[in-house]
Structure formats: C-alpha cells, structure tokens
Amino acid sequence: MNEHLKNLRKKNKLTQENVAEQLHVSRQAVAKWESGDTVPDLNHAIALARLFNVRLDDLAGEATEYGIGPKGKHIFGLTTIGERGQIVIPKKARDLFQLQAGDKLLILGDEEQGLALVKNEHFLTFADDIFAAQRNDDE
Image (cartoon, rainbow, N blue to C red; front, side, top):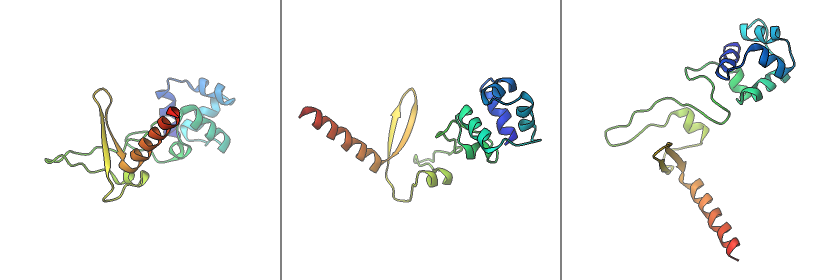
C-alpha cells in the first residue's frame, strides 16, 4: 500500500501536507503511511481511495506494472493482432466482464478516441431502451 500511496500522491501533484490537510491528519502520519512504518486505519484508507478516485482494494492490493487507474478504469496489458485480425482478450478482462467463448462482441470505433468492444446483448438492450424512449416521446 505504501508505494501506491506515494505514487498516487505524486501522480495527483499533491504534497504530503496537502493529503494530510484533506484527511485531517498530520503530515508525519502520511509520511509514515508512505514509508510503510504504519498503515492507515480503515476510515483513512477509505478517505484516501476517495481522494485519489481509486477502489479501496486497488489501493491496498499488490502493485502491478501499470499502477492504479481511476475507479472503474483498467489496463489489462497488451495483445497482438494476428495475421487474420484476431486478438486475445486477457483472462482478467474476460473474468471481470464475464466474457465466454461464443459471446458476440460489437466493435465500435471513433477515429479520435479509438476502439471499444461491447457485448452484443448489452448493446441490443441499450438500443431497445432508446427506441422505447423515442416511442414514449412520440406518443
């Protein structure tokens, strides 16, 4: 946790004093958390997760080579496009989004923001909701 705290603080361009003020603790307490001498209690850990907009389990978890992203945002690693355009979706992503062999994914693209993969069934449900809302407005 201590390395996460230090990295998140620096990434957010905050000093130990800034963090201490926002959590109503001393700068020394923040320094001890970052050095690993002590760990924040649960209330302070929750406040830190909120301050840095990360999930509590990410804050407390093992460091990854990609660091911690904002809450709900993930980096799953790299994949290589095969000769026929196929890609492999990393297991952690498949598990998180409950993707299984045979699922159909809709590929969306934005020339400025990139590609997105959406489970077809979720997109169809969303489209049905849009059409239903349009019908309600027309009536």
